[in-house]
Image: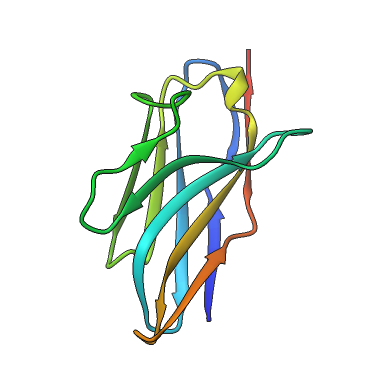
Length: 120
């Protein structure tokens, strides 16, 4: 099993930046896809950024050019750099990974979320 813990959320003014971090710990895991989702009050959870092994990252149209997903340490740290933030970016942000536990069992895991609030 894996544990995902997000950090780096908070309150920021419109136009500012935040970098979210996701610490991945637990079993040996081979990541195939790492992603960030967000859920605003009263709305469905939506995909913000996703990076599949061997492919270029993909972004929601609403964040294209402003957000960047990256990772280090064999995907044990996953980041979301958020620049030029807008009030509509306010949401709880979730880290998500898919891959193989122990190189065998395909699974997916979620973090608990971190709140991002952008004031206008």
